[in-house]
Length: 95
Image (cartoon, rainbow, N blue to C red; front, top):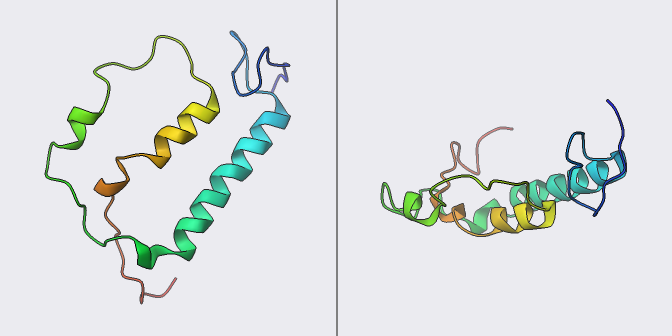
């Protein structure tokens, strides 16, 4: 993988990959969020809390024309559609 220094942290350069430092930082943040979710699954409902099709109205009609900073992408993940998630196994099932 060709390592390129980004202009602004969190943005991929126009024709390259995210630099290794940012990749590690954002990767760790994502894993931490997943670990927090798994550690506290009992806080979340088992079934989706939205009606079919309700999520679509909350999404943009097309993807962004240019990349967005990772901080914005991760903030989007923290907002809905989380209420539309459904767990596929119970808290008591074997892992």
